[in-house]
Length: 274
Image 1 (cartoon, rainbow, N blue to C red):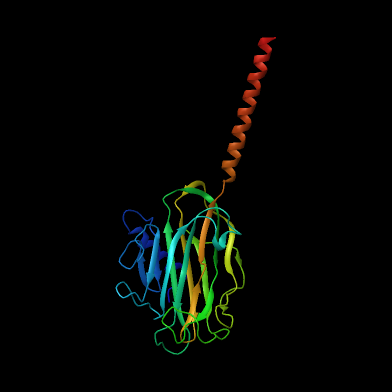
Image 2: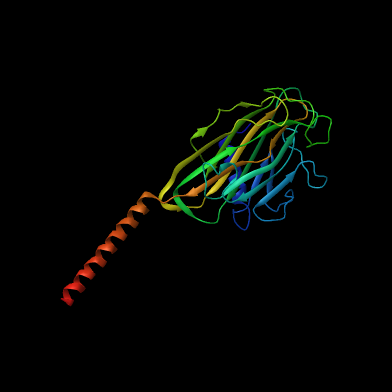
């Protein structure tokens, strides 16, 4: 299986090849690359991709054989990142359900999804970034694919194997929560422990502007038949531009100089009036 760095690089290559510019959402759904407004995108709007591997007309087969549907959207502040990154844009994987519906070989099946967006707006090369995944487990035994409610999932049948957010291919530092692999809790519809990175100040190009690309890379495994991995809320990655120290310093020096100059002018004016 390709490592995380190679998956992110491959998705960036796809982004660069998309006209009119690499500013659309791109999603690699376990081997199926879906471009914003491309054939497998069920959402006609810009900056949003909707996919469903079981769709009768625009469905596809994933590398693992696990069925999946969901949305990747560009959003403003809020969501699961609100507490640690209250400002700035987010790239969000939501309404996501992966279902081990097809007959698969015994043992856990691993599923990977990578989603990306490049922004048109330039930001300072020093900024704050964070990512988080807020997932649930469930089971759909005996029901139509994607519908929950069946046999309770045993603890540890499934797991979050890896989750990482990136800005311009650089991993967001500062992990919080239990380190992967993170096993599922027992029962039905119960949440995994929260896991993510940041909020961390990242310095990619001090003193200059960059064109940011956000990437989220999630891998999990499903061990039981009809087990489901659900993002009722989301897996999110985001950034918030922060003033660079040099910029703030220059601004402060400029304001001080301007203030001193005005002060001298007032003193000169009072002297002439006297």
